[in-house]
Image (tube, rainbow, N blue to C red):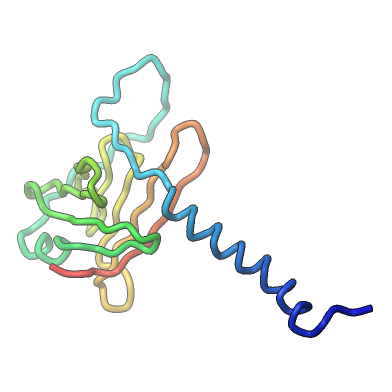
Length: 149
């Protein structure tokens, strides 16, 4: 015997609702990117040669500085520190210093965090990539739109 119409549809909707709730919870529990400016330790790492740091003009700096609303709910503030570096602060976390390596592209000293600006149709977006845990082979990529300057 088949269950009543409403109960039958509820059984289909319940797994979908649980999946949506689980994905929303994982975004809130995602670890923030951590930058290791002092890369001393007993581990051995092989890295590509570091790209040269590129100077950012004041006009370019004013185009990327501001607040960004990230796709996972984080809020990121970006400010120029000098003509070659930006400082990015996600929510209330410790600020990260990233250096300019190309047009609108910045990367942390340890290479674990990168930000690319002037993305999207209106060139007001930013894409951030980071390695959340050095023990895992994964990279998280988040996109955003400029919230305010």
